[in-house]
Length: 433
Image (cartoon, one colour):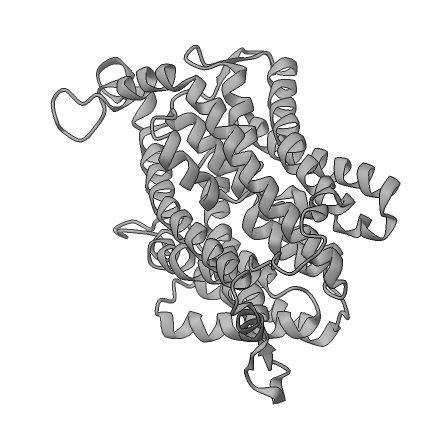
């Protein structure tokens, strides 16, 4: 790459609109997520804590289809499939129309995201391999970023974070979600059954054909999605994989005369369900760790699994994200936007250390039959996510005045036409596309 370019520069107007809408909806979901997690923790440590655990173990569903699952399992396997379907739609948008569609622009967030996944996993393995070798299998836990939780923090302390950095955080989370689903599919699935898997692949192929043929109607796609989900579940591969796969197979380009492509239309319809119902319910069923009555309640914070997860999320994430972004900029002769510093990228990396939802999911998959380490893993995820949120708050507050100046310049709309001034006049040709 011979020409110099700027990273974290102003987004094109169309992409800016998409990013801001997605972030607004996820922010509301983040508040609900936090509320559900707090409710679970309070209930699980109240005098009625046993009723909480009994609730999570209630089983429902058809036994004949091997779907007589506990409510906690339905939340992890079923509700999170909706979350990953939305993640698949987001990724498809980014790959075709967004920041990942241009390889030169995509390399920074992709390498930063890969660094933000690899470094935490390596730190986790380094700690547990020396102190608790039976826990090494949980290496995938600190890899994920919870965009909803992170945006809830931003809504309180970082409302004026420049759009380019918020878009970077969103892209990090989207790439993280893809990485997490690949890790789940390859390393945290078991009892593989070929016939149901081939059936799921056939269902996905039919979905793709229907999209190519421009077939419309929810009554076609909802039953097909349920069948693909059921077959994927029966195959032994975690059922959430079906969600992201169907999202990636959905058409994202508009046809002439079409108001919205299916991916955008479905994302608008399903994201509120995902962010407002599915993810909070999963958090409610997963976050209820009981400390009351546990003689080792304080000592659990010093357990190897807890420390390894905390080190991975709180230290590994920012190191991996900042290191990946800086190395790409260094070796591609790219320069940082004049309004930002590398400390700002590090702050986003700290924020990405909030690994709540997917980290809890991988914890349950990694230690499904080991309740002791599962409890430790959940404590590690919860404590590390809170610590990362606190540190990110401090880092963002330190640069609040600078962010406010950039934000005000980005949002200025002197003629009141709804298009910021920076996208007009001399910048229109470059930024309004």
